[in-house]
Length: 314
Image 1: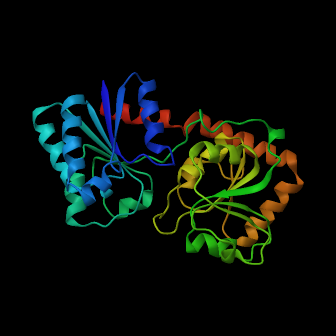
Image 2: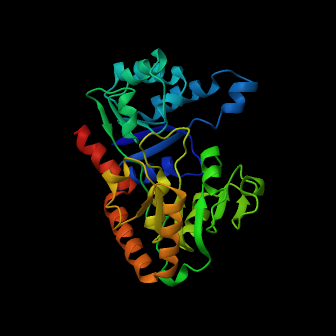
Image 3: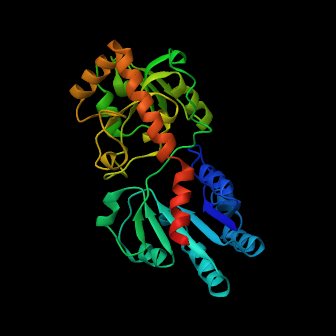
């Protein structure tokens, strides 16, 4: 069996992680990176990437085409897939992780997908159908590894994410020290506060190393594309053995036992109280982080997600 991924390769490791998980199930996999040919498309030969994809689809002849973030893909990709489906036995799976508009182009795209998954239950209010299901994001336990409780001594609380106004507003005036990593940040966002800010884009192995050295990890939703959902960093810190402090979103209750596997807050004041408790009580922190690690490594890996998809396709 063969799976061809149509998706961009980026620092989050999502596409690569799912590809590895399919390989564990004895699939042959290839990735067509949608951003590889963007400059050629823009400056030299329009739709060069579309031609390359058509050639790849014919040569590899997959059983499954897996679309990550399909709403961002060019319409021409779907036309090529549709033509290929008419002549070949092929299943198309889509995984939507960003909010989208219910407009004609997007509905046309969805109509060509055999099985569509949303990472956020809030998207069902935008579009739902018989072939649409909830499938949260996940982690790769081969990359995010618990390196031991005593190893977590460099960062009291780390936060790895790109800057958004909502995230910056939360950190501003916060009394607890947070080590902040990500693009777009600068000290003026949280001026006068004791946070340590490193404006950078970390690759997935660097993120894993930060989490492995953190007693606690903060996760704040991206208010621009989240309704109820979790992101990959709702799972990665737990796999690395760190205690996760997460702002409340509705889908948390579908994936964790709150208070036993992760800690959840709804305000700066609640976060500060949890932060102080975890700093004082190392045994409490260790218990929550270990329960979280067990839950994630048994239920929330890319392999778990692939197993669910394959069961549906049988």
